[in-house]
Image 1 (cartoon, rainbow, N blue to C red):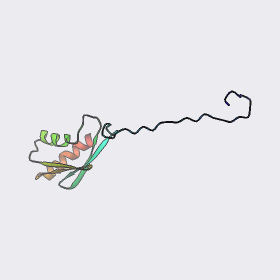
Image 2: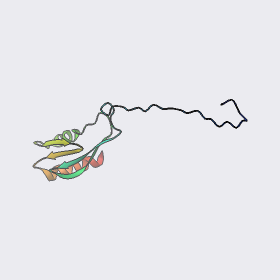
Image 3: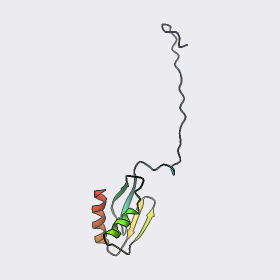
Image 4: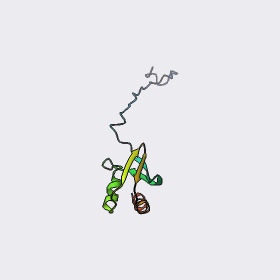
Length: 100
């Protein structure tokens, strides 16, 4: 079949590849991303670039900026921050999300 160099046999080997289905919980997506809202108003997108980053880094950053008494909730890919200081928080997060 394959030894016939000058012959007319046109048989080719068939290669079979096994499909690999990894568990989605075991492997982080290449870039997880979350839409960030302040009091239901969209501010921007938080992209997690490394395995050590977490969407809760948003709140940690706000705390470092002196923002306290905030509530936050993750619903699907929406990260909602509730605060009485909405204008200040939106300004801080706008800069934070653009620099990441």
